[in-house]
Length: 127
Image (cartoon, rainbow, N blue to C red):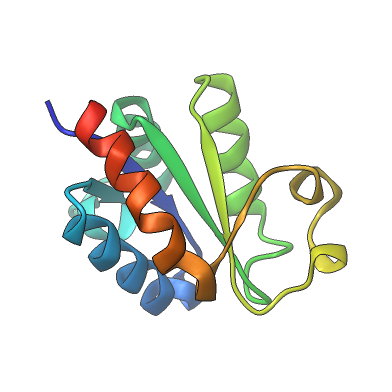
């Protein structure tokens, strides 16, 4: 059984999501994202629900592009309702620029991701 994560991002942050996905896959994590898994005829919401349900953890990419995104807020709410661990990955924002709910969560600064990969790999190996 492999450790599966869902990456929640806006379309404007697809390059950041891809870079994150590549780094996670390098340490043995199976990555789901709506952009990677949506097929013709699938709605984003339906696909998000399906992939979030199957994920062990949700990585939420938070940037200037997404800090006020209703889509990200919806996916975060869905992850909470499914009792999925959420790991915000913050790029280009300071703590005070984050939404209040995220300011109180443990998050990873994107530029510090390499320091966290070994911990993520341990979670993947334990699965």
